[in-house]
Structure formats: C-alpha cells, structure tokens
Amino acid sequence: MNFLHHGTYGTYTTHRTYLTGMMLSCNNAQGRPRQAEACRWISPRADARIIVVLLLCLHVPNGSSFAVELWSDDEGHQGTLDVAGKITSLTSDPPDDPMLYPEGTTQTTLARLRLGLNIKHSDEMDSQFAYEQRARWTSDGVGVSAVGSLLPSGAEMPFRITQLDWEICEHNDDFAYRHEIDRAFVAFHPEWGEVSVGRQAIGLGRGVLFSAVDLFAPFSPLEVDREWRRGVDAARAEYRLSDTSSAELISVFGETWEQSAVLGRIRGYAGDVDGSFIFGKYTEDFLVAGVVSAIVSEAEVHAELAVFDTPDEHPDGTLWGGDDVVTKAVFGTSYTFDIGNGLTVLAEYHYSDFGVEDAEDALARLANPDFQQRFLRGDTQILGRQALATQLSYTFNDALGGTFLVLTNPTDGSGVLSPSLRLDMAENITLIGSAFIGWGDEPSGGQLQSEYGATATSLFLQANVYY
Image (cartoon, rainbow, N blue to C red; front, side):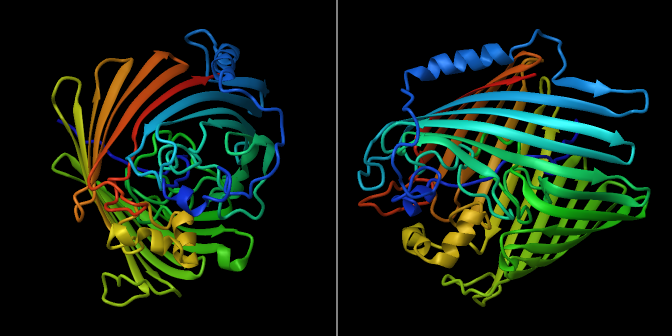
C-alpha cells in the first residue's frame, strides 16, 4: 500500500456555475450586451469538418516530443513552442422547468488552440508566453446556464489590469470566436529565491476538488478540463529562509486598488509535514489562512482554513456568529489501496460561509451586487455552504484510466454522480469522456429547491492533441 500526495500548484482554469446564466440572461455567452452580427455565421454542421481539420493539423507521429525546439545554443539559451488543440462536446438534458431551461436539451461545442512559448534566457532567467484562440458553438437558448460549471468560462477575468482578450467574431448567443493572451511573464532565479512578474497562474491550496485559499481563478468541483488555470497579472518574490522554508510576497493587480490583492506567505516542511501561512489584503477583505498536508499511516491528509474580514454583511450569518467574519475550510484525505494496479480513494469536505444556507434563497441572493461579485470572482466554489465529495481513481493499463466522483450537499441531500474515462490513444492524443447525473429536489417555477437538483444530465466528450 502507498499514499498519493495531492497538490494544486499547477496550472488550471477558472470556474463558473450554471447560475451565471441566470444573472446574465440579458447578455450573450461572454456576459456582454447583445449586438448585431459581427461575423459570417458558421453553421453547426461545420463542426465536424473543423474538428477533423484541427486534429489532422496537430497530429504528429507517436513518440514525437510535445514541444517544438525553435532554437538553442551551446550557452544554454533555448526557445520551445508547445501547441495544444482541444475539441469538446457537451450535451445536456436539464430538469423540466421551462422558466430556467426553456429550450430543453442543449448542445455546446468548444474548440481551443493554444500556443505556449517558453524561453530560457540564462540559468537565472526564463519567460513564458501563451496565446489562445477559442470558438464556442451553442444550440439556441443554452447560453451559459447549462454549461458553466463543466466548461471553462468565457467571462471577463478578475485580477487583470487589462483583459488582453478580444472578440474575433460572434453571432448572437450561438457562436463566439475569441483570442486571448493568457500568459506573459518573466521569471528570475537568483541564489536567494524566485521572482516572477507578469501574467501567470497562481495556486495556493492543497485541496483537490475544493479549496479555501485558491483565490485567483479557482475552478468548479465539476469542471473536467483543468489543464490550464487562467492567468492573472501579478508580481511574486520568494526568499528562501532556509533549506526547508521560505517567505513570499504576492501582489496581484486588478483594474483598481479595491480589485487587487497583496498577500504574504510563509511556507516550509519538516519530514512528512508541509504547510503555509497566508495573510494580507484580498480585494476589500483582510485574509488570514493556513494550509497543511502530511502523511499519516501511509495516507495523505490535507487541510485548509481561511478567515476573511469582509466589509459586507452576510444575511445567513457566519460560523463565528457574526455577519462579516467569513470562514472557508477544506479537510481531505487520500489513500491508494493495493488492489490491481492501485485503487486511489479521495474524500474531501468543504465549508464556505460565502454560500447560501437554503438553495431557495439563491436567486434572491444573486440579485445582491456584493454576492454576485463574489460568486463570479470565485470566492465560493459552491452555491451552498457545505459539500462532501468522494472520488475513486483507477488505472486499468498504460492507456486507460478512470474516475468515479460522488459530490453531495449534505444539508439538502442533493448531489451529482460523475463517472469518467481517459484514453491515451497515442503519446500526444488523449480522449476523455465524462457523464454527469444529478439528483435531489428539482427546480420548480423558476425557483431552486436544492443545490444539485438543478444539474442537467450531461455527456462530456473531449479530444486533446499536443505537438
């Protein structure tokens, strides 16, 4: 038996849930006012042709490297280009509530092409730049309400001085084609630590499905594609205090001071235990948080606790009995059993004072500008206050792996089942298939009755090609 250590310092994406569509019902899928046709309409029948062309253009023989070397020299200078293409199809059959889902079954197709330039200037300096194009086709009426928690959001990204995200063309709510600069930063590696400046991904937590401290572009527990977290505009400086500890200053910039963050982080490890302490200004809040992970009897355990002193009041009250000091917490563990190739079981519990106590109050709360801003920014990954998840992971062979996720709201009894399979067809081609089946009290008359009872039964299919 062995353990599986989880961390979330990688690069992932952002999160939105299906309720985003309710707030943006008068807007298009990007949350912008509707406008006249801006490009020649591309019929959904063209989807298959576009998919085939993209895959053929990106396909490389098995065994080829994922990065194209652009240049290199004897002094160690090097430039490489990563190319990735993704085609995603999502079919959703929502609950029978014409006020929330007037169109019934919906179809969404998302195509993404990402170019990542990595430059090694010297042993002490490197830089990264990532440019992405994305096109989204949706059936009539789907908007973002049925797909927001499963697919990456197209909404404007918080914590950016300027978006650097432009529309190429769009057609009402049916088609949108955009491009974006998602990475543009320089990293320095002096003897005393690390410094990075520019648009970059920032992950601070140890949670796998949930996080109390992932403040910048967190993702939904149900979001499938987590390969790239969207970048934010930031400057980071980390100073090594010893071989096992460091202190870091993280400045993340929005359009105004009130939309920015300045955080300090002290972290280190001793034996099988590592942890960090985070504090500072987060938008208009003051934050104090702690993160710890450890190995206990061959199992991995992790915990996150964050307390926010907020300027706004929270009608449902908070864990501490007041209405302005908000708590978020995550407790989790994982263990790999010696069954076949190894069966990994992950369990996580999440609590968030930012959520609503009763799902029936959700739409009214979303009408509150303060709550709406926090929800869209990702201050809460769940609509309710509590969530409990269990995930089984198993690798059948070198090419095929699968997971089975059960996500529940323990207070209202609703939840989602999500089985998923991943097939590595070749070294550079991956296929992913996931299903989502919700249960719980379904919405009625345009009103939620439970958190996950409004989840559409959905089929997610994705093809990934890397060069």
